[in-house]
Amino acid sequence: MTSIKFKLRLSTISGKPATLYIQLIHKREVKTITLPYKLYPYEWNNLHEEVIFFQAVPHRYHYLKEIDKQVIKEKKTLFSIIRQLCEQKSYSMEDILRLYNNRHNEGLFPFIQKKIEELQKRGRFHTARNYRTTSRVFYSFCQRSKLQFEELNSGLLKDFEEYLKTKEIKLNSISFYMRILRSLYNKALEEGFIERDENPFRLVYTGIQKTRKRAVSSNVIANLKKLNLEENDGLNLSKDLFLFSFYTRGMAFIDMAHLLKTSVIGNYLEYTRQKTKQYLRIRITPDLKEILQKYQSLTSGSPYLLPIIRGKNGTFQLQYESAQRLHNKRLKKISELLNLPVPLTSYVARHSWATIAHRKGIPLHIISEGMGHHSERTTVIYLDSLDNRLLDKANEEVTSL
Image (cartoon, rainbow, N blue to C red; front, top):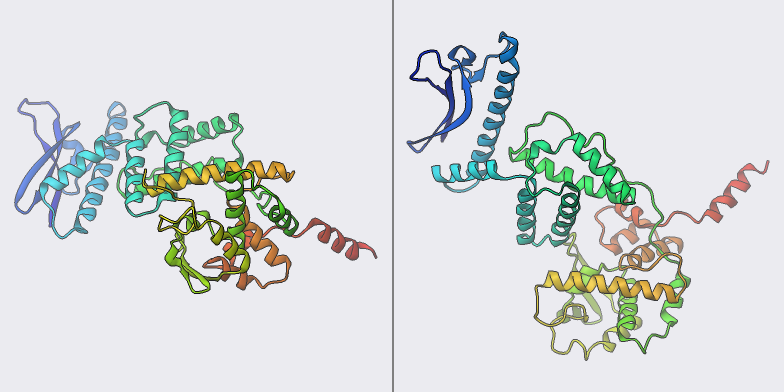
């Protein structure tokens, strides 16, 4: 059990204000933390450990109110530290002081970096990358390596939003950055770094604007399949990887990268989705078998099924991110060859499989299960809107009285 008390250390000089300090007692060990606040004895309630400022003269009122605010913050920080340490089997006074000092020396960007490292240790590389991207963009706006949590207010965030708009960043991308920052803000709040006194995100956009769905028709898939790219190994590989994703019910690129040769069991591909940890089993069709046989020589010395992760240089995550960037770059070139108005990306295959299945009348619950979604609501996001021609026809039938 840890005791936390806020006390006054009286001055040895008569008439001088006392110094506020924190007394910590843990396993009979006593430590004190001196705070930079001066109070007269009549301005402090020893019983309730709080500042008395309601009857203060005007020139002291605002000062005392600020001290009261800081005392509440210090209490919240220490209680948060104790809760965190209680999750361990045991902890020492040294552990308490170490975490206390870390929190007081830590600003927004070191906090984000710490969260990135925690995510990477847990294998949540995609979220870690989102945090890293947001941190980089926000830093380019602030141009300051040291930014305290108290400075992350509604005014600063509104300025950040305007900054992104001047860079012609799309509204959904702005919302993405704001939602990441809001998530980090809430984590800092939970851990006692911030005292909740306002919602700094109330003036900025954090919604999701409806956009054109990233799906192509079955005709585009057929044209892609017929496209001869044998003279360009890189483009040909990206074409095959895109089709592989489509043939496997829109398998995500991260899951394709993780596929091992042991994932092939008989006539089936068996794997666990990286995002949801859901187990999926897919029959190997003739089209799939053709792609797998085509790249057997490229993966002969590798445990991986597809030639996405190659060699032993660099971590899996770095190789994956590099491979995905290159894949999307090549898909953009392929899109130009097919004269597509919207470029293909690694996500388009997944959206296209869902949309084409939907247009063929396949029930939503089957599409959802096939894609490894936990709910049909997620699947609906992937589905393209109804063809406007169908809506126009329906409108004509209704209004032609």
